[in-house]
Length: 182
Image (cartoon, rainbow, N blue to C red):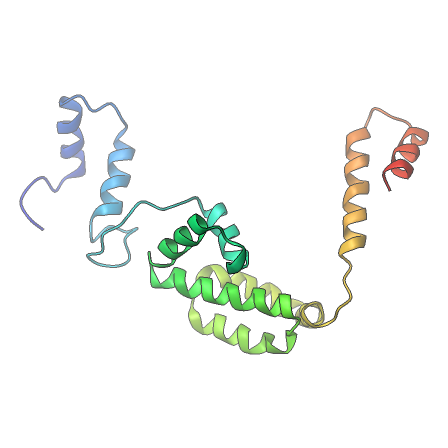
């Protein structure tokens, strides 16, 4: 590292003396993120760009069909995938699983599970453990054309109606609301 201040606390004191009004934590987080040896920067010497979007929005980009993405969403997805090789690998694995789901090719599940285990992507290991617990049901869901989605939707709607009337209505009113909604 070159010359200059190497102490975050000293740097923070100098910044506040010059009128900086933010917290010590904000200085610390920025420096740890930007320094090559920082704990949040896994790749040595890379230039970190700001995260293009929140994780929830990234998840939705990962799960949508590539053909259904707008041009700006495609650009964001490409930028996101170029941030780190692990993100690109995660996208590829999620896309493979989504393709299995869309094309009902559950016979590929075992090979996909092995790929995920070998990848070492920590965030997907919990998902794999859950799939392993109920593997036959997952394989059936990925293979068979039957679905209980309609039933689950009706149950969800019924529970919503019950929650909305909790403590305010008697059974006859609840009965009428359920019959009218379903």
